[in-house]
Length: 470
Image (cartoon, rainbow, N blue to C red):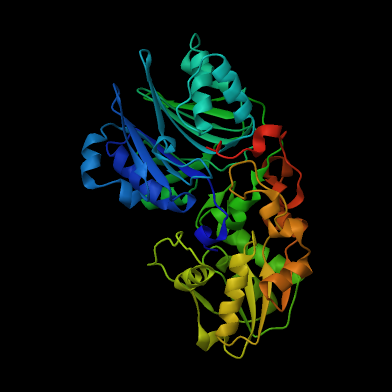
């Protein structure tokens, strides 16, 4: 669904490359492929072997980077980032990569995820004299690394990573090395590729396809990778735990052409649609999906039921953001600007509207109304994930429990609120089967905490405070 009107957002995307003469340009294209993971800010830092060169800003990749910037981003190594700013976490100072300079050398950090003990660590660091420049929890890692300055860089990073908890996929660039790390449970995706002898790191494999890189493997949970002119080396900074990769990466966030932990996202979403059809069949004339992330699930639902799939909803790709909406009337108009119902397809038809999730319910209600205004006689809503009843503390902006419609209402009450003729969700078991069925759950398990309330890590009392996300 449309993230900006839905209230469900991924934190960011990380991209890095080592050993390419056009490192900044390749990172620019890689970040373009990851733009869906964050639209609030973007940045690239490069290393020429002696110095780090940074350019970043608020906005989309095309807004932040013009041709002139690339002549200043010198070097054969680069680290890039796209960011979605959570409440209180906006502003230029929080746009990544964050660069820290000292007499012993500089380092740049980029992070996807959220540290559940960041607030506690910030208090400890400030009590010990640290002065924090941002509200991002990414900065915590830099201070922890510098506290271990008597160690070599690799050992200092490993020691610092041992003190943080939560979800994180880190990229760290110095003048002469690139470091990459994934949390012990692998809550966030991160992959390694090769491009003409250069190493490439990306939050999603779709970025490899854009620049012509070849996928090599996933970064493993608890793994710290060091890349320099001598090649790639790997070590464990923590023992890998039960894999709990965020299930919403498959449901909503990742691009359908990405492969995550050995599974194609489009294929997994089709399977979700098929599982949903088994669990919640309905008599109807046409199936349609809410663009874009729900299209795959709608196709799967159609294939399983034999109900024809049609483009009953069209997304207008040339409309800017509509976040300044002082009245309910203008909010309704904002949805109509972004989505249109195809009257010739839905008029006089019983429509199955497949969507990936419902967060607050306001957008679902507006889309159901769009379809009925276009002449649909019935609108049956099918959701290709379980009800989101719990906030996420690992880097997804699902706000507070009180704002989640499923935490305060039954399925029947939600159906009435959104105006659908029927409503059904995929079960947690159906979702897990769609992603990991037939696979070793130790290596391919998923986190469903936002659905079940079973968090894979300890949740600290201060975790719920806003503005401390990476």
